[in-house]
Image (cartoon, rainbow, N blue to C red):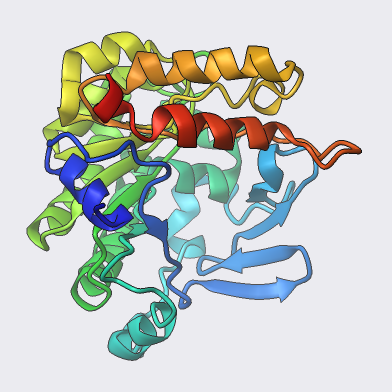
Length: 325
C-alpha cells in the first residue's frame, strides 16, 4: 500500500489515488513567527494579539477584541512594520522544526500568505471593510507591502523546508456570501495571491487555498494562479457543481458540514452513518477528494463517541472506495 504521502501526491498529480485519503499533508509551523506572550494569548510578528475563545469554533484564535494595531488605513506606514528577516538562520530553523517528521512517508504543508485577512487582523472586519470601500489605493499599498514580506518568507521556506505544498489561508467569505465582490478580489487581493503562488510553484511545490464560507465566486481566479486543492470547502458552496466543473483539477479537501451541531453530533449513529456514506458517494467518485469528516462531542458512559462512527465508516466504506465502486 502506498504511504499517505505518496497516495496524496498521486492525487495532487491529477491521478486516482490508491485509497481515499483521510486528511491532507501534515501542517508544520515555522517557529520564527509566533511570540508567546501570556497563557492563552499569542502575538504575531506584527504585534497583533490573538486569543482563544470558548465560543469560537474549535477554540480557534482570533484577534484580541479591541486590541487592534491600526485604526486609520492612511496611517498604516507608521503603524505596520514587517520584521527584519536577515538574522534568521533558515537552515537551522528548518532542521529544528522538521526533526520529528519522517519526510519519506509524511508530506508537509506550510500555511502562509494571507493578504485580505491581515487587514481584518490589524483593524477588525468592520473598519477593514470600510477601508477597502473608502481607501482602496491605501489598502492596495498595504497589501503590496505585506506581499513583499510574505514572498520573502516563502522563498526561504520553500528553499530550506522544501514543503510538499504551501496553503494560502485567507478567509474572504461568510457562510452566506463573500466579504468583498469578485471584482474587488481581482483588483485588490488576487495580484498578491498570484505573486505568492508563483514562488511556490517555481520551487516545485503545490499550492493550496484555505478559504472558509461561501467563496466559490473566487475559484476561477484561484485556478488562474495554479491552486490544486481547496479546504475546507464548506457546504454553503455548491460542491457537486464545483466537482463536476473542475474534476480532478481541484481537490476538495473537506466538504463536510461541520457547522451543523459540530458535524451532526445530535444524530443517532445510524442516521450519522447514512450521512457519512452519502458524503463519500457525492464527493469521492473519480478522485479529487480528501475525506475530512469529524464530529465534536464527548464520549458517553459506555465510552462511545460519534467519532467512532466516523472512523468505522472511513475504514469499512470510504477508504477502499476506489476498489469497491
